[in-house]
Length: 469
Image (cartoon, rainbow, N blue to C red; front, side, top):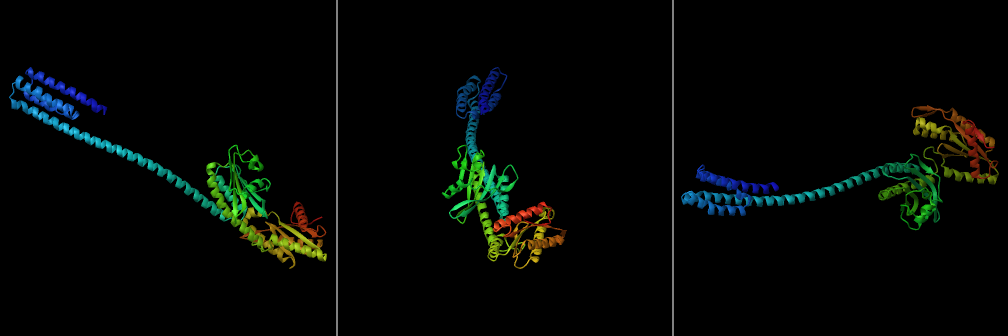
């Protein structure tokens, strides 16, 4: 625009200079009349630069000055003198009209360009909003995919340690936190207390069962029983409830606890420390999914408790075995019989699992269960006590009978060649025995005495039968 304005002034000055030069030359006789006409042709485009002012001035000047100069001073006839002025005026008019048309065109183009600029800005703004929205959708989609994957993995577990291990792994990969704890509650009438606890830390890879701290979570449980939907404390002013918990005494910056419901009752508490406030909603959604998986595990545990036999070995389960053991103890007490209790444990079973895998380990458990059942009487009770431990109750059997039965089982297992999935291996067991009522008249204490004897057998070199003394 500055160049255009400057060109107007330069053009006017150049035109004036040209006209003056031609008239001086003509007066001096050096330039003829046609040259003046040519000069007028060159000057006429000045009407383009200023359609109103310059055009009017040039037209008026041409008739008031040029015409009189041509007729009276140069002696040119009226018609020839007027012809170039008329042509000059027409050209000025043409250039003025063209300029006006051009200005209107430019104005429309400028208006259109401004409108396009506004539209472009609006489109850019909409694009940015759509891009942010798309980014949010992608983030939510990835979050849902991750949540689906972790839920799918948790669905494969039937134990709390299994599903919590999956949860801990997901938390480490997708959340910023210090520690997370899972407290499983047990109900006794209207009161609830912590039965088991599992923990995971962001800094360490270790995770699993922790010592139950029911007293530490009593205040948290009380808050939920009073109707709190969740506990979330951030900043230095934490809730008083944190001072009564283990988490509250560790100098944490935030504490979040969410109740896990099953059948409209609090079955557990999922607590996390130092969780950013912006991740609270995502953590609550994850806790909701975990609560659904926890309901399945609780149902499985209930069904497992109601079952009589172990699914892998076919032996009695621990709960049913205890009930029958108490019945045999009462019968022995009434009739003054002896009753022996044997606790057996597979030697180096963890090494077997690590070397050959859990499938071979399961085959070993099944084979040992078969040997035990084949080498006891029909009235004897054989149960899988837990893991690689087995329990055997021998009614109407004293110390020597218990040692004889234990040695028979130990020897049969030692002589057996275990074959599983193309693997051939030798396995031994250690056995501890205790006798009712000589060693103890209480079932619980009798089990502890047999367990102590088993410990002595392990310390004495394994693959032996040791009687409690």
